[in-house]
Image (cartoon, rainbow, N blue to C red; front, side):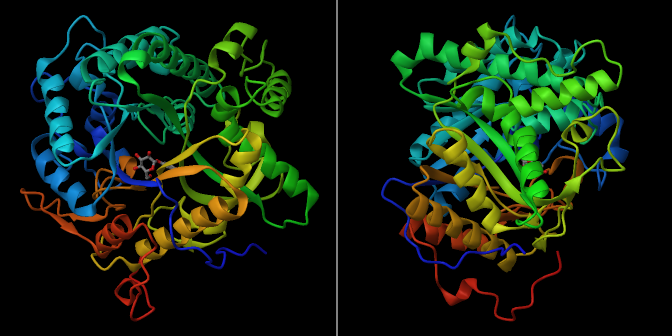
Length: 493
Ligand code: PNW
């Protein structure tokens, strides 16, 4: 069976390793219809289908960071982070979705935030797209529409031009898997298109091309003046064989990792480029058996293979959890056709400790295995961990979160020192409890507790905030007893 933590050998982070925390615009800003911002797909979903949000909440106000960003920056300074990862709201900057009109108030808001960060010496790491597409572009098909390649490039051009003097680190897309599979292939995220097995692959085609165009735009037009970096953040649920001795499970775990992480990493980070061959083959075989006239996933042509290859200065990894592969087959809940059916493997979440999120189990060793796999699969890329964290129901004495950070950070140290994996920085998800998408405020990932029943939305540091502050101060894993659960009995998740 899988052992879930490695024994700790190392506590000190290498010289130059950086620490940050992350948020996303829709999850914290609020002010959904203020000062010219237009409706986006999350406004639309939460307003028309509140039944699809666990606690019926929405991001209309969220943490009100549109008005309270100065408090956010104070908290960041208290935590002592090197950088703050946040995202820009496309609908706030470009209310029509297009560049015919720049909303001055949207530009002002981000300039104010950037100035406040600069005053505290906190580097911005900025995501262009964290899921909140202007509804007007969704009405045209969103990421299933190839026109989005141009629209995204236009939007990025505005952002580079307006903010590029202050922002030196950019992320094009947050978690393309969640965008394409959860939002287009399913209804787990807005706009909940649920075009399983078809829309998900149309989305990836557009998204990867749009990413590449924005990278080239920066490279060709801005890099020499602005001297920044551009990357993409890919999420992995890491898959492992339930029984490491079982050859079929081992093979299928690799297939699943290629479908999940490789779907977006292989086209950008391999020498060969294009989608992973196992994925192209599986989908082609399934499509034929299902009577489709052509494969639902089309491999890129040679032009696009070359155009997409190498378009990320770092590999950004968002990582939370590991699931297990138990054998070949099609999950009885898998839709037909679908990404899940295309994989052809059965999975289980019966591993590690539970969290407040159904999909999230605590499996630190899986993180180390993912990082080693990335080193060998993608030619030893420089890596930033752009999200990592765990949910609970909201307690100030969050020993389980501290344990999670400690154990996952320990695995990072192990792979840096034992395997030479080139991890350069770490980002905790998230600064403060915020609108956790379809879970609303029922699952909390924050270092700060946010009381959403108080109109002042007070933020209170959890014990994990003190832990993180000590970490950024000392560059070492905190060993103090005050961070260890005195009772050894944890709060209920
Ligand atoms: C990420 N998974 O989403 C997002 O980038 C954040 O906006 C979000 O709040 C955070 O993680 C916590 O959920 C994920 O199933 C959604 O592995 C699903 C998974 C991972 C990350």
